[in-house]
Length: 215
View 1 (cartoon, rainbow, N blue to C red):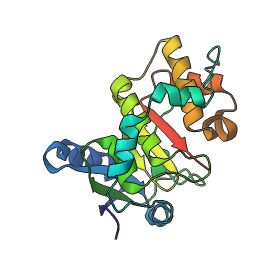
View 2: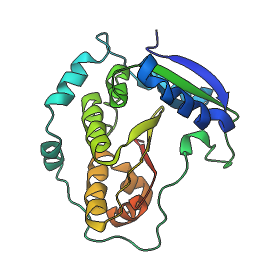
View 3: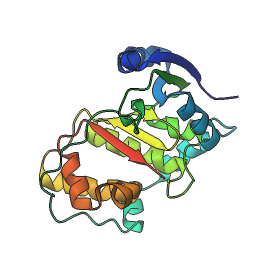
């Protein structure tokens, strides 16, 4: 049995519906998250491993995790400079067919009962495959970024996480540090994406959306 309920909406309605459900979250404690279309949902259900304790142990592990020490253990090295002519991240990739560029006709939105938005990774058991971090690491890092930039996960799909960023960094030192952090969290951003941490850093300047995926 899945640990969340779902509703189906059109792509055009998805973000508006998400915002409406988010406004009710403090009252309902049911946090909305965009999953994607039916194919995304099926892949997502194959990947997650919701724990029997509803994520309690993962949340406890996250509270004990020293985020800066974790970065150090991952040999975090920030880029030395910003690349030129790289546009900030924009849009929500999960709602678009990457082959055609068209919006997916229907989108599933999950509603999951959690105390904090970043607890979603614990209750879903999201992580552990390929280079994707363990659930408690997702929890700890997303709480850390929430405290710094106000981020919340909007999309949690089969192997993708997309975040809303209300207070994105704009000064170069902060952006370079963030790029180093994001790289050790999600190597594919560079290895199969931007090609360098400098380009990743440039994409983060003022970006209101963050995209992560683990191939």
